[in-house]
Every structure is written in structure tokens, then in C-alpha cells.
Amino acid sequence: MAPALRPVTEGPTDPEVMLKALTAACPVPENPFEKAFWCAYMGAACEVLCSVLHREYMITVEHPLDTGAKDDRFVLFPLTRTERLVDTEKLRRDDPEMYENLAFISATTAGKALGKKGLRAAMAAEFGEENLHLYESVNVKDVETIYDPEEWDNFIRETRIPDGYMILDKRGTEAGTEAGTEAGTEAGTEAGAEAGAGAAATGGDA
Image (cartoon, rainbow, N blue to C red; front, side):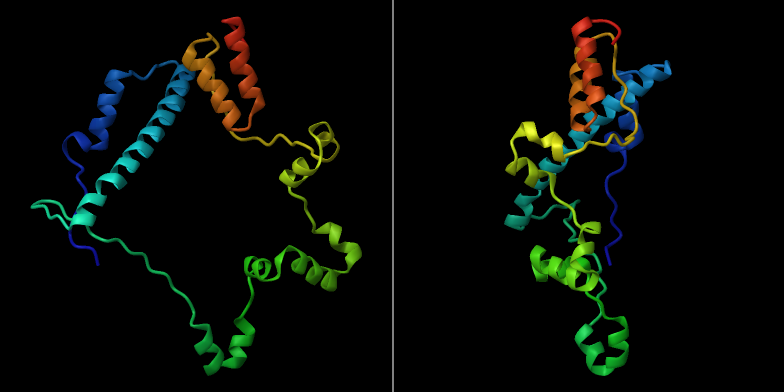
């Protein structure tokens, strides 16, 4: 059990204090569209900052771990998580009938053990070779590797799936267009990228 320690949550690291400092430096707009824009890109910036701080933490904490250094106030406490597993061998020996009722092989384990070809053969034996097409799939990357790009459209279809909203600044500002285009591309939303690019090209309404 972890000792009665707590992370530092007072002073400059208090989330509320940090939020007040952030909003004082970058005020939250009242216009709901502007506010949504502010929240989206401020959130993205904070995610980047979070990853930077986490990486810095991992680098910094290596020193006391490697050297065994101690501090009067802080201590590095090892964290653990509990994993519960059934002792299958003991259950099989002590209660074989119940073991037979409960034991199973996961699809992941079967796939690793048999491989793609072996798993396909097992499926064919169970459901019939003529019915395999109901369960089979082909990787997009495999098709793109084998066929020339001009042939991809013959075999690959794209489906637009709703994935929330991205807000863009139509004024053509650097933050509104470059970030919008990048975000649209990363999110797989070509429409978002096109909107950002259009605003950049016109410098006005997209």
C-alpha cells in the first residue's frame, strides 16, 4: 500500500491557479465560435506541453533512480498494479470437468499460434471454403504495395465517418489556416484541410 503521500497541488502547480494564469495571458473570447477555436487550439497546445513535461520528467527522474540519491522532502515511490489470472494448470488438475467448461482460446492467441494461413484453413474446415469470403478481409497497405497508385481506386473505397467537428478561422490567419490544415490532415478530414487551404488562398471567407 502506498504511504500517505500526495502530489504537490498547492501554489503555482494548482490546476486552478495555472488556468487563471493561462486565461489572464490569453483571455477566453465570449463569442461561442471564437471560444470554441480558442479551446481547440489551446487544448492542442496543452497536450503538446503535457508530453514535453512528461518526457522531461522521465529524463529527470533517472538521476535519483540511477544514483540512489535521497531528498528530505520528496521520495520516489514505486507504483504497481494488480493483475488477476487463473492458475489454469491447477484448475485443470483439481477440477478437469470445470476446466473443460471454462477454458477457451482467444482469437488473438489462435491467430498467433496458427498464423494467417493456418487460421484461414481452420475457418475453412469449420465453415466451408465457399463461405470464407464472408469473414475475410484484405489490408489496404497490401493492396497499395502490390498495385500501382492509378489502380488503387479499383479495389479501395473510402467512407466518410462522422468524427466530431473542427473549427477553423476563416480570416486566413497563420494560426487559423496552417493549424487548421494540419489538424484536418491528421484527423483524416480532407474537408478540414481544404477549408484551411481555401481560407489561406483567399484571405477571406472559405
